[in-house]
Amino acid sequence: MAFPVDLRRCQLLGLAGTASLALGGETSGALPVQDVLASASVKAALGLVGVYFGVVLLVAAWVLLGRLVRGPQPPTPRALLLVLAVWAAPLLLAPPLFSRDVYSYLAQGAMADAHMDVYAQGPAMLGGPLADEVAPMWQHTGAPYGPAFLAVASALAGLTRGQLPAGLLGMRLVALLGVALMAAALPRLARHSGADPAAALWLGALNPLVLLHLVAGAHNDAIMLGMLGLGLVAARGRWPAVGAVLVTLAALVKAPAALGLLAVLALQIRAGRRPLPAVLTTAAASALTTVAATAVAGTGYGWIGALTTPVSPQNWALTSLAGRATGALLKHLGSSLAPLAVPAWHLLGLAATAVAVALIWLRLRPRPVYALGLSLLTVAVFGPAIRPWYVLWGLFLIAAGAPDTSVRHRVAALAGVLALAVLPSGGPADLGQLVLAVSGGVLGVVVLWQAHQAAQAPAPGRTA
Image (cartoon, rainbow, N blue to C red):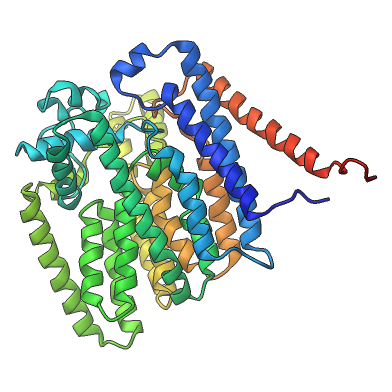
């Protein structure tokens, strides 16, 4: 007998997962400094086990939901949106999970609200309790985000007056807005690309990485992707200039979204517009949006220099790993070129990205949404820094534009693995934490196995 799967079981299993995540995060998440100091080590250990128990349940619920989506009677997009809302609900009031970046957002918003130069100065210049929450390695680093996001963060800082709980809730609501825009755009982009809207929602919005990092982590990638998706929807219709404006605003949150302007152009040309007017309209709309957003934010054009913001020396991006390995070898050989190894590999990664993106667009120009998804995934993989949520840049659009299910299966497998890759505190792991994390994961597997066995057992009074 197969393991019974229906929409309600998937909904409840995922809800149990995110509820366990939220509860475990109360003692093991990316907590405010005072809460970390006050948290007993036993409670923190139990919380870590609970978080990974919840992650395994959530991933299992997502995989089972995928079976339904591929089945003979798939759930409707509206039903899937309800599942997303149910799964996300416990995370709304949970502490930040898997990263401390949200504290940097709040500190940088407070700096912008105080008319400080967020691109030339780090949060340490702000001082006070809010700056103390920022991870030490980013205390003296300028903001790597564009003026559109800093305008939002500054407005939030003014509304919350530096109160941390209100600020955290505000940032999570901004992230939820971004996820809502993603969910609204996915079915429309999928229909335009000839893909299944339900499958696109399953992979692009109900993905565990979305819940773990965009909702629980409150990352600004959510609002970037939401505006990017909405811009592409507008560009394929009667409002190409509006599409260019929205995509530019997405790029003024995080720069990689600027590649979306290629898709805006391609969608216009595909709709029958002549290339030259399409280029001129897109360029003008993008330029005016950039000038207006920068003026409203009041941050100046320091965001251009911030594109070279240094990355963590421990980052596990491919080019960073290769650079550190090459540098260590050169140092062992006594070469004076060792310090140049990491920058050289970063340049090589940039060149490889440019070549790969050009080849993708030459080959997939008739499928602009899919081409953009592959391009953004390439940027994430070959860039100087990578985090699990960066994969969502490409995965979101691959979900809507992939030509066949095999591509979705590969990126789904990648997402499932990356869901387990980061500790809930956002910090580096030690051996004890790894043991606790594995214990939580094993506990989740045991519970699922017991549920499977119970489902296979014959009902009382019946023979197998």
